[in-house]
Length: 116
Image 1 (cartoon, rainbow, N blue to C red):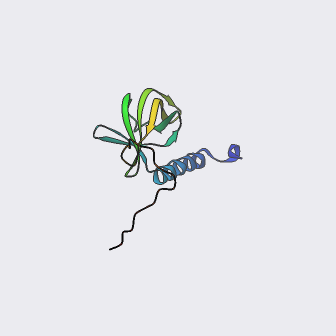
Image 2 (image 1 turned 30 degrees about the vertical axis):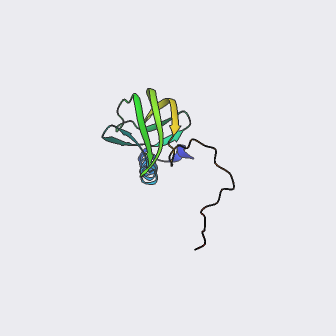
Image 3 (image 1 turned 90 degrees about the horizontal axis):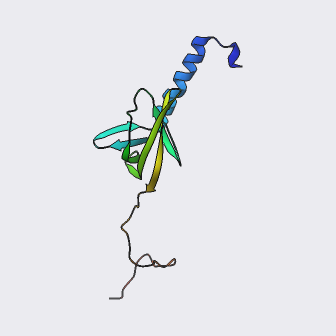
């Protein structure tokens, strides 16, 4: 069907798709004090717009809005069409609570009531 559309219409549709992706995605990568928007995220890496993306290597932090998701080690990147693709050597989910040195019971009480 795209074979019958004029080039200007195809270009407009592609720009609208990119704008919708930017609005819907809250994912970003933090490198030092710099913050960059992520276009796509998967198990082996992430991608950003080619025009906005620096050539990253090393330790990065990945956030979904204010929520810290992963710590990752970026080892390589390459440009593919209109995006820069980054690959992880490893990425680790960030814990939302402190580490414990004991096994937690599955049916642990939420709190204890005392009689006075």
